[in-house]
Image 1 (cartoon, rainbow, N blue to C red):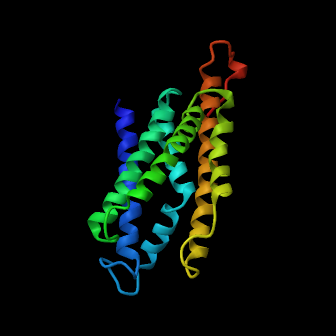
Image 2: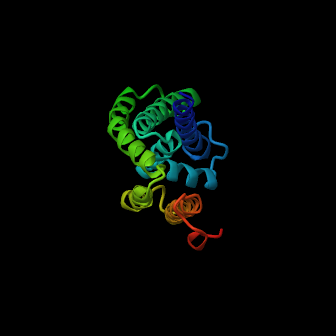
Image 3: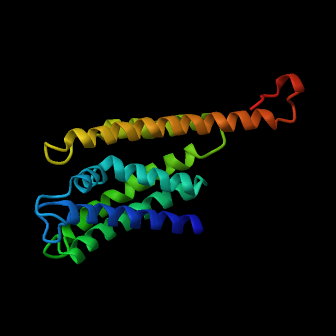
Length: 200
């Protein structure tokens, strides 16, 4: 239960951060911090508003859930909460004239299969199995496949840099985690003699 709550909090943070970075950073927002826009917030909003960012957040929720049955549920809860938070925050901040029920429903429906799939992938990557590297490395591949230029032309190169860097860091983290688990398994194997021990 605590891991599902963590997934809900993760979705809450994603939705709020995505909405607030838009409303506070955009030069067209009535509550913008600057009439010319705030570049770091615009870049942040351009990245968080992508399908890959939401997909990877569901992956992370599944990873935190650990159990294969809980991963899909955690991913779905994460994205549904993020969707609701995003549109409610937009309305509260005054960024939109009211609650966009059509957008809320549309992305909410998409959040169900996406959350289930990415949550399952994250849970599989979290397993202590030899094959868990495959779903782990699928996550950065998904980032690159879903990546598209976002934001205004003057910030697109920055969002592209953030996207590629995130994919690289995630790939390295997945590979390092998997390698660490393999070494721990070899070190604690009851069948491994002194000559087969792996020294960390």
